[in-house]
Image: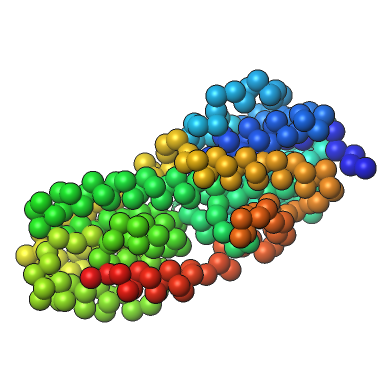
Length: 326
Ligand code: F6P
């Protein structure tokens, strides 16, 4: 029998479309199991400051399709300190919180793992980040929406690129991972994709531009992951613009628009399944695990196996991209 009676839910780190759908699923699943639910605003920062408030099923109406997070989010430096975590614990105790569900990326789970060891409070994580850079899950909530936003934007840029015979360097998010760039590159038929996981990009890029020049193919899309080793899109463009003047080089940095917008059906579905699974995991007395999604099934992965450096880019996708470029 589970001793859990009252739980809290928060969103932390960069917001991601579908986080609201996940909050909704957690709240409604908890109420279904006769648990009380409290929302914490601004992630761990709000836990430290005591921004806790009761959530009811009706508060979850009309949010499944909304981007951002109604709980708001933050990246808390104070939670990394013992004093910050002690204040957070006091606030949880004051409200008789027995367990917490956190929705965020690996930094969020790391913080939750440390806290849970210091104070005896179980945490369950739901992966929510547009970067899709977490091991243990095929998808993080928000990635599919961000990918579709990027693809839609690049399609528009391609129209003008081909009308003017221009080459665009387009920078996409992903922090130090190339998942968004690689998959958006394949989906838009980009001519080159620069991601941090692949070596020898300077040579590859020059080789590509020489080949394009020979073929008189002046309209090109070169996707640059923000974390790639040659620098951002502007820096990469600067490195080649003198040698390839006739390419009409232009740079677009897509930025935070990639994090906004209504979640896709896939992200809503994923968030709903993982939200329900997270509450089930707590009731089953699990702790310090992420509920993830592997081969279309919900899985449980210990926090220490969700550190992002452990996730590799799929070689088969790299091969597909290579074969289909030019
Ligand atoms: O982790 C999500 C993300 O959007 C990354 O892709 C990006 O590097 C980072 O967050 C940007 O963070 P901020 O919104 O704090 O500038």
